[in-house]
Image 1 (cartoon, chains in turn green, blue):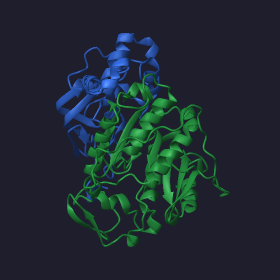
Image 2: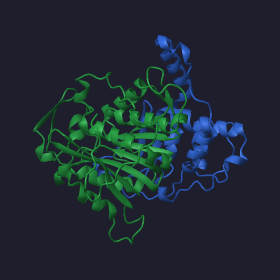
Image 3: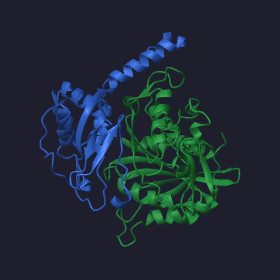
Image 4: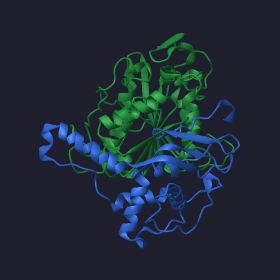
Length: 286
Length: 166
């Protein structure tokens, strides 16, 4: 994997690594076929950047000592399984940390994990990936929109690799092997559960430079997080990340300064150029 | 869906103020520690290199329990376990919740939880097992205010709302 490149951006803050936690293996996803990836998002450069950023910031996560973590839109489940292994490594679990007998269970992570996805294929895939990576009795998967079903103020750690492509930039037909062609351009909100929107929903970030879903997620995450909790969010350059960071700091501009107004801090901890995409990972602190 | 997840979720149907706790009903439950022990044993049997390192489900751990305890509303856990017929061995809650009445999820606190140190180790272990390993396979969640029912199928609760509910 590429190394993280610091930049001179005003929002940039170097991640806080943790000695002894590096080079964790990417979770196995070889139980999926090309056909599966018609139904949910195949791990790609953006997913791997998020994994690298989480690992590079393990020191921050250790200090947080999360008890409740959640991933929004887990897709294949690769990030959630990685997060489980990362939390186990942070807590220095005993037993093998990789290989076929490296089982990870809740006591190893000290942390409950919940995964919310609007795509039924993705929640099934997340369960399967957990099992294939020997995660047992560790996470709950829920069909749900963002983290809206989570009790307000209950989460310590949230992770989201959102759909970030502008609707208008998507091809007219995104083919889905499972459910035939899924047509784009039917409006932004796909959370209605009517026609299954498998792959399409994993790409379409809505209008607004593709930041529509990420924008909604800021409000949902702010509500779900406990004070001091972190929200790791991946963004692409056309989403105008700095504008979103400004928004995150003042979600409710009428409120006085404090936790009710918005996130306390918004920093970019990782950046990478992947092909024609420029991606960044942000850590927003409630 | 484990009882931990039930404890952490609320209804977000539009207009609902008191969406917590979700009513719980089940037609099939299981204990995930039993499922996991079996899966790990099978994995070990398949893997020829595993002979040197026995690895089963980690044992009960007080630190893990202490970490999660402030997130749990014990009265709600007790009520949920009772609804599933698995409250045996659980210490009684300090405050009781009415199964049919909801509260504002944003105001919920664990401050009325019993102090962990005041419980016996057996009680802590029982709470731990119910919280982390009791899994609702088939059943439903009900919004205490609107009555909206969210089905649980194959351990996955469906919290998606229709367009007119958001």
